[in-house]
Image 1 (cartoon, rainbow, N blue to C red):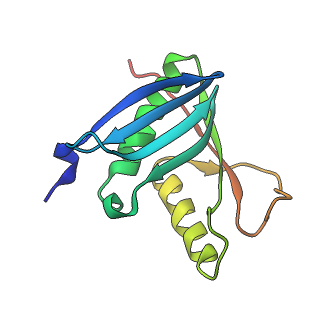
Image 2 (image 1 turned 120 degrees about the vertical axis):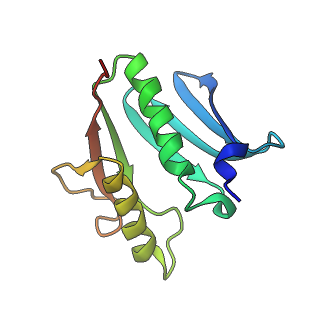
Length: 129
């Protein structure tokens, strides 16, 4: 079943200049969300049951579109796993591949917070037209 047909992605609002975009299923249950402020993406999450179906890329595209509307010319983020167990390195690699596939690249600099598990990434945001 293609679950993309049964979802909606929309800006959910802002709190203290922090913006939220949600992904909802046909039952209106939130199955994914993103949080960003200015031109920095802080969180992007898709419920595990809905992963590997392109929803993360759709959500990311919507966030980037909202950022462009706000005048951003690039999106920055720090990619790192949220659970630091035996699978953290594998999770980190999947995260990096996800963002690389979506047009992001690594920035220079070392993160002092878990340098082997995290990295700074960015993507120029181009206006269509």
